[in-house]
Length: 347
Picture 1 (cartoon, rainbow, N blue to C red):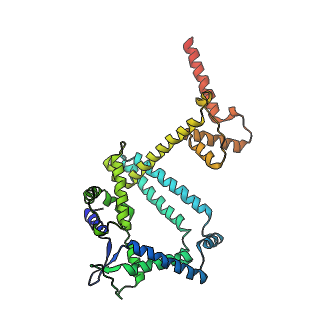
Picture 2 (picture 1 turned 30 degrees about the vertical axis):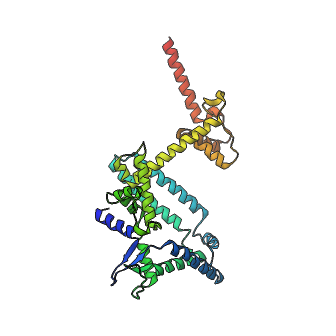
Picture 3 (picture 1 turned 90 degrees about the vertical axis):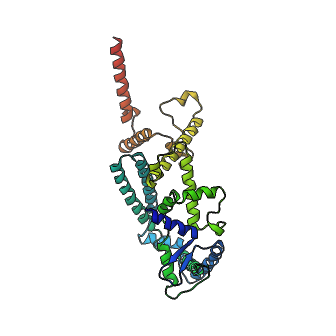
């Protein structure tokens, strides 16, 4: 993202408005004030009631229609969660392979593919939202907000027959600022000095700082996020910080490490008996599926692979002796070899 685009978007965010092209005098779509947002939900409620009495579906009913017509199933949601976890794993992998540019490029391409797949799967559930009461109400609310936020440079309401409200709403939605652009602005040399002054009490967004727009609020949130990164004792390199995928991977990696340490402490508190604390295997009883998952998460990757291998063995052969498990056989063989080595050394 080049510096010109960063500056253009930054000052658009500061002004809290989007310029409408080819208008004379110049017109803008301003970000709505809290008063407008509050009142817009009255429009939402009124439209929802009218839509309901006209016989439009509510979203719960659409779920059944989607399911009956094979357009969506609960398995899609599980698949979406699985893809989200895979994206997180890829971002951790990107962070861990940051110095290997060739491998990193392949990981990033895979992340983009998985993100598109995720959006496609998640999109199944909302594909009929536009014919629901909720969809009609949200559309009416959005159109009403646009009608109240078309202003001139002096913030005076304006109307122009050249564009319909629908086309202006489409124009506004097509120019929403993506998160990656907001992140680039938040860490840019153009905004960081402004942010530093704002933290000292300077008025960052002019007379309207008491009521931040959506983009202003998001920009402040990302800036605070980068502050936390820079202040971290385990802060990553500057190049990692400037790479969204790698920095996300660092966040996920640090969070998982924290969760692992937390679960390890929980496990240690559950195993208070010193006779079993150093045992090779400890079996804990779970009261429900959530507790069982938490206990399983305490296992290392190696231990999870052993559990999976044993479960596969039992599923395949039914009743199995402990000594028939592949990992137990390996341990017995290893112990036998060690005994033989010690015996030879003793001789």
